[in-house]
Image 1 (cartoon, rainbow, N blue to C red):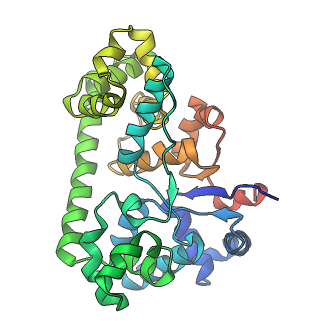
Image 2 (cartoon, rainbow, N blue to C red):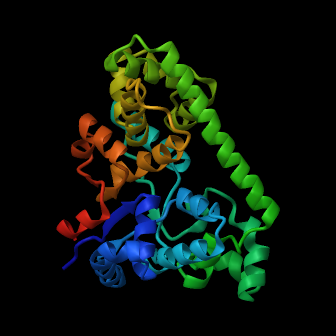
Length: 328
């Protein structure tokens, strides 16, 4: 009677399949059964289908307005405003927990993963969009400022976020450009890493990946800031030795997922490094450890199965949305 809702994270392509079913597209006929089931289960709050920041970005990038609006309608209908927090906000709390376990401190409050708070989903200051939302909804800015965290799950406002009506065009363009630059930067880094580490096997590559994470100025700063709450720094971890450092890293779910999947992806020399891998990894780093079911691409499911990350985090990982019928 008191079962928790089942959290199911869908890759963008699977949301598109549901949109085709929703809008009676011929290609969506085979997804009608699962679509109708999801409508019933989300209405009863038995199932929750959270959206990530990357769903919003990928939807906003669609140039065909009709397609964009139809997809936004489906996402609005089924997500009910539920979203998934960004890895940038979750990883520091995970680092603190791993530190608490290592040094025998009390465990910090678990992070909020699935939320109805647009500021957590987007990782931005919601005040930046208050003026625009006020113009759309007619609500005073003071009212929005007080109630904004709960407004994303109202259909009108969620739809506005998905279609871009809640954004200033210049801000949106700036955000998309930053997103695209991040993808290109990630792709270049990994292409270079593959060239430099080509002779390494999986174990060696992963050790190199983790070592690099500990020594890069940007990531070292994240560790030091997160560990400071207990009066430690990354140096206190590393001084414990290589095995302890790796075990500490493996106790940080999001970073552990990234290290395993990047390693398996990069050692496959015949697999081209796709720029979109960056976005895929960013959502898998959170969805895989915390969702109950993840429906993703064939390639990622294969790597997750090979790494046994699905078993480690007790997450069902599927490649077809029609397979959901066996689990819901």
